Structure formats: C-alpha cells, structure tokens
Image: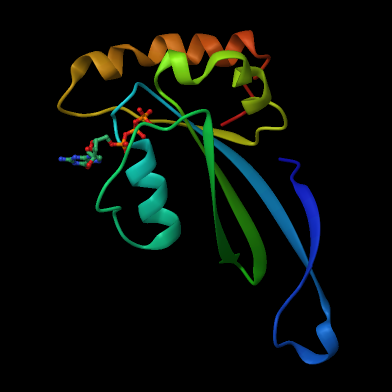
Length: 132
Ligand SMILES: Nc1nc2c(ncn2[C@@H]2O[C@H](COP(=O)(O)OP(=O)(O)OP(=O)(O)O)[C@@H](O)[C@H]2O)c(=O)[nH]1
C-alpha cells in the first residue's frame, strides 16, 4: 500500500534530525449516530467525549503510531453521517484514501444493512477492491 510521505522534525531530538513519517488516510463512514466521532476520539485522544454533536462535513483526527520502529501517522477522517451535512464535499473525502472503516451500531440493525449504501458510495467514488 502506498502512503503519503511527510518529513517532520521530531521535537527534542538531537539537532532536529528529520524523521521520515508515513501518513495513512483512513475514511470513517457509516450512518448518523453510530458512534464514528466517539470511536475516533477514543482512538486519538484516549477518552470518550463527554458531549458530541452531529458532525458537519468532516473532522480530522490524527494518531502517531510506532510500528516495528517506524513512525506512522494515522489520519482519521470522521465524516458526517447525515446527508445534509455531506453535500458537495463527499468527493473530497475519497481522494487518496488508504483504507475505509465502516461503522455501525450493534443495537441498530438498520445501520448494519445500510452499509451496502456506503459501500456503493465508495465504488461510485472510484475506491477499488484493493483498498482495505
Ligand atoms: N451506548 C453507547 N453510546 C454511544 C457509543 N458510541 C457513541 N455513542 C453515543 O451515540 C451518539 C452519537 O455518537 P457520535 O459519535 O456522534 O455518532 P456519529 O456516527 O459520529 O454521528 P454523525 O456525526 O451524525 O455521523 C452520542 O450520543 C454518543 O454518546 C457506544 O459505544 N455506546
């Protein structure tokens, strides 16, 4: 899988050595209210938000990972589940995506069966079978 390459200076390192950091863009999609914001917030900030509102457009969250000694930047795109908050921005979400996380609520079966529509949207936005 190809990733974006970024160069960021690692704070506190000797004479600001440049550290190679690969960035992976992960799109988080699913029906409104299934918990996308809570899930991504938990992953990136370490706790669940005490109060959430419906996402408008998209929110970005990042987490740095160390995988086998390599710095990896996980960039999570938390997208709006409500159609009225997605509007014309949808196409931008799908550009240069490395992976898609489909989210549903185990207490709402419709949010699981509704994933077919989200998978179809991925297809319509040219995400191939190679995207996990
Ligand atoms: N019981 C329970 N409630 C949750 C869980 N995750 C999220 N919630 C609640 O579900 C509601 C919606 O959560 P969000 O994270 O905003 O859902 P979302 O998928 O981002 O919604 P949109 O932004 O509209 O697409 C909030 O009231 C959360 O507190 C969970 O794991 N368990």
